[in-house]
Image (cartoon, rainbow, N blue to C red; front, side, top):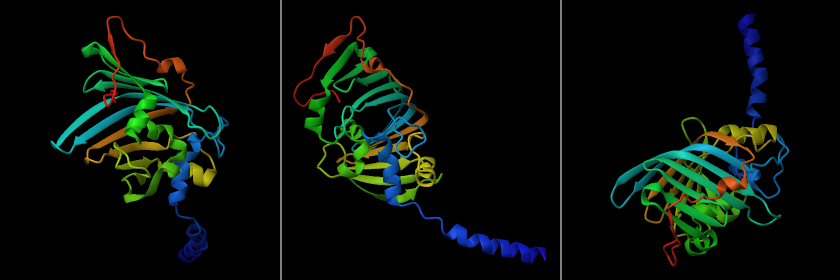
Length: 259
């Protein structure tokens, strides 16, 4: 009787299991966009919960196609998204602090960007708006539009569309010609997708695990994020570069904008 009872129980469960809907491309896109939209709220555990800042350790690998060379770096990154009004892109502030291969800081308050290498005793100061106008869809403008990825990019499943841990991989191509991005790959945290699909909840898990930017010359830069902390209430003052004494300020013009 026990084997027959077990089989009966199994057949009773099968219809329930088969009703579980597969994860769609739209599910993954919504998981990425929703926490960064201008309409995102600070009410945690809801379908519209937002991510307004984050900090993480990062690991970077750049492959230079022309000389078949790989460069690696690591450090800590911080971002703050300041929404000003509905329909407008957020003011994006960031701080990349490289510990390897050299000590370097790339800091922006959303209007000005500073690139500082202590060994050079110089800081390159550039206007973010000029970078956006001259270089099109670069990583800075990409990060300012996280809430509207499907507006700015054609999005499809990558091949393969899952990594070894079952996280989802998307392939994005800019809708406009870009000097810096030919293709963008994004690895999306499967737990963030499950929160969105099964619990109707966003904002508690940072959805990006890794990004790979491929430029028109087939150079690739992959950044992996680890130890991610969201909504730390980071101060805007944290994203302003305080120039050390004796450091020269260089303000490039024309094509040399320091990024």
